[in-house]
Image (cartoon, rainbow, N blue to C red):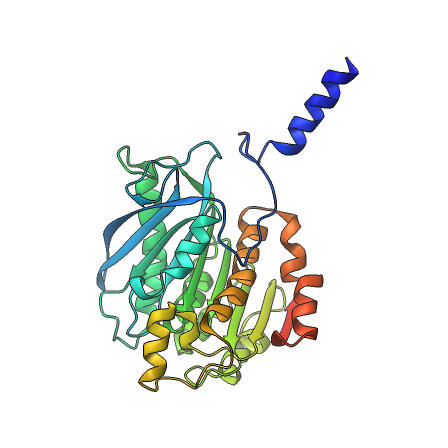
Length: 319
C-alpha cells in the first residue's frame, strides 16, 4: 500500500492538477528562452468603430508549427494576451514578442491598426479592447483553431511606444476585462495619462536607458505620478537598450542604419532576452498564477540584474 501511495504522490508532483481541473505537465521554464510549445497561427480582421479594420495574427500553442496547425489541447485553457506595435509599425515587425509568449503557453493576438501613422493613442487602445473581443469570439467559434482553448478569466495586454500608451489607456478604461499589463517604452498622451490614474491591475513598465525616441524621463511619470500607489506596479530600465531594440532584430538593424534612434549599447538580441525575461515572468505570475516566477520580477533574479548593471533602474510597488 505504501508503495502505491508513494507512486501516487510522485504522479501528483510531476503532473499537478491545475486551476481548471485538467492534468498538466509542470516545470519552470526559463522566461528569457523559448518555451516548450509549438506555434500555430492564422490571420484575422476585426472592425472597431470609429477607426475601422484592424488586421492581426492569432498564435496559439499547437502540436506542430504552422498555419492552422492542430492546437495543443491536453494542457487545458491558455491565458490570452493582446500585442500592439507602435507608430508606423505593423504586427509583422514585432512578431518576436507574440512568438515568444505563445511558446510559453499563451494565446496571442498581435494587431496592426487601420492607420498606423495616426498620432492618436486611442486608436491603439481600441485595438486592444477589440482584440480581446475577437479572441472571445474565436474561442466560441466551432471551426476556429482556438475553439474553447482560451481561458476567458485571464487576459493580458502588452504594447510598444504608441502601442504602449494604448495599452495603458485600455487597461485604465477597461480594468474589468484586463488582468495584467506591460507597457514597453510607452508614449505619452493626454488620454493615456488620464486613463493611467484608473489602472487597478498589475502593470509593468519597461524602457531602454539609451532610448532617444521615448526617453526614460518621459516614461517614469507613469510610474511615479499617474499610476496609483494602490496598484501593483513595476518600472525597469534596460541598460544600453534603446527604442528600436524592442522590434524584430532585422528591422531594428535597418532602423538604426537610417538613424531613427541612438546606437544600441547592447545587442538587439540581448535586449530581447532581458525584456522577455521580465514580461514573460510577469504574465506567468499574474495570468498563470505561478509563484515560482516571483524571483524574476520582485526577488533575487531582478535584484541581481540591477546590482550587476543589466538594469540601470529597477523599482516596484506592492500595496
